[in-house]
Length: 283
Image 1 (spheres, rainbow, N blue to C red):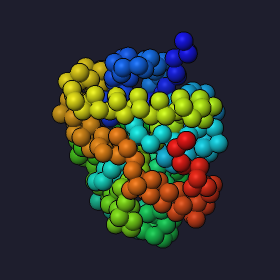
Image 2 (tube, rainbow, N blue to C red; image 1 turned 90 degrees about the horizontal axis):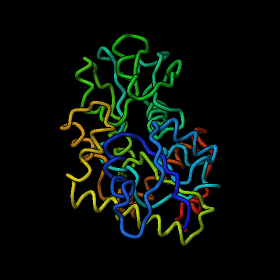
Image 3 (cartoon, rainbow, N blue to C red; image 1 turned 30 degrees about the horizontal axis):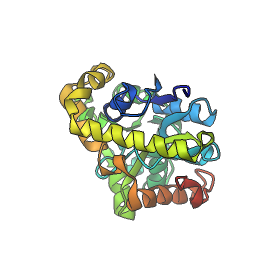
Image 4 (tube, one colour; image 1 turned 90 degrees about the vertical axis):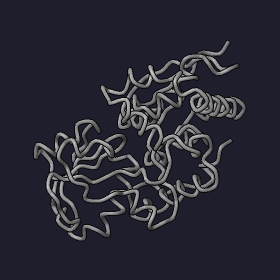
């Protein structure tokens, strides 16, 4: 019997919802993996060091790991109306971000790439210092004045008003207006050394886990809420509804176009290394 796969994903509701069935050995013919929970900046680093078999990472990290990891065509997070937000403590215009300190969840994240692409046009003076913080620390840092603005992801879309913050700009709206494509946020990658046959089986397992979650949402509820960092159950449901969608089951033509578009635009700005589009193809 093969050793269980080592897997890392975030404790966010969309990930625990998607992977519940697989993580609990409920997918027929698939062994439960060894699961590690970690925020996106940590999983990005794990992938770059090649430490685990399967990881949820940012699409912004792909250019640095595609030699060792293959992009799975399922299990990740893409969508419309779900982009990162730039938040401030008081209403500001985009131009007023010039020279300011901005907190971000990772400099290898899709959120950061979308922010940089947006800021290249919207903040002609250029922002100041970038501060990397765990995503759950960003809104308190903005509220308390430790940074001038924060780039937030995940459930912060639903909760920033509780911190008295203002949305300066929606990176997803800017991306969709410019491209007409969905927003590529989180990718699932797996070691190429597993081989094409096992990778295809893994993709089937992830798709089955997604479909089981949709078929019986109540089955994963305890697992989701146990790892949701005291999140309100209603917010967790909103989170799942926004980030788990048709692209989670299969990237499809629009999904792959979004990933290629993001990485091409980012490479043109010198934000990431150029990627051969063939490297994104699933074995």
